[in-house]
Length: 185
Image (cartoon, rainbow, N blue to C red; front, side, top):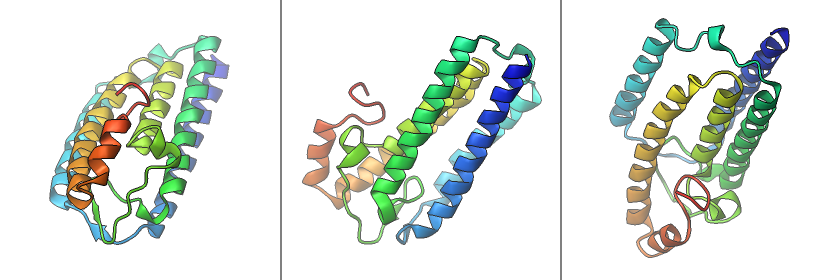
């Protein structure tokens, strides 16, 4: 069980380092318009649900996985997911923005990870979340599902905005590339 606590520490450090990078990288994005009231309401609902789950003990380590193979598979999924999200963030550069934002002087990026999936950052987060759940506890899939609902909603709003901004190019891109999971969805 001591080994699993070390694995928990790896996940905690991995997520912390990732979020610190993400916050620092946010300072390099283009200016844009964010519908804050809508986004804040959605995030508030998700945060309240996660707090309720935490308060009810849903994520306590009592049912912590102790299978080494599952831990290994989960760590690989976690690393691949965060790596994919970082690759997408680096590739989109200054065009990156908070979910559902409209950029001033937008550019349509369809290369790199965006050639594989229209929302690779969301995919990377989800894959890392699934890796966390596989390794630590299946209960974490509840949090992943909540985040996925948010990502599908955000992606739908973003795609509506992109279709308005790129009325010819974006519909063509949509037809050739999946939304959240490469080659599947």
